[in-house]
Image 1 (cartoon, one colour):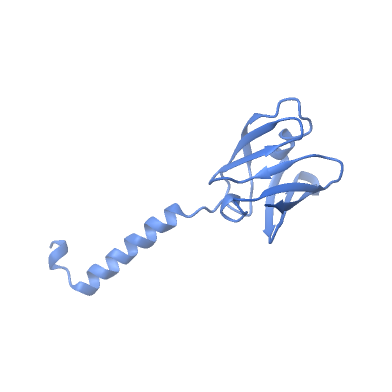
Image 2 (cartoon, helix red, strand yellow):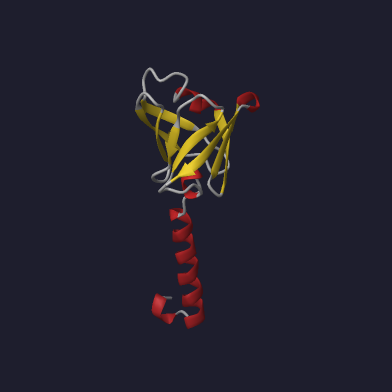
Length: 128
């Protein structure tokens, strides 16, 4: 049996299944797929700290901790987060290393909330 000998409706079903399978593989299920990629998320709570996050592409986060820029990998599916392979931002305590303690994310409108161990919570607001 070849592709040409299959009935037209079976060929259509097979083609549609392949299309959905390929599309599902390209969909970004990390926080980058839910956060606004054009926005910078500025930390508003807790007050007194400088931290900006951006989610430019699937599995990546970049930011500015007030004393230097950094990048990190983030591959956990939303709503979980798992920041690792942090590069840059050396000497910017407590950020960006504190990102590794965050485990959950919530994006709603222009608000991003990261929740970590012990219930610590960081609230960010999107800026264009």
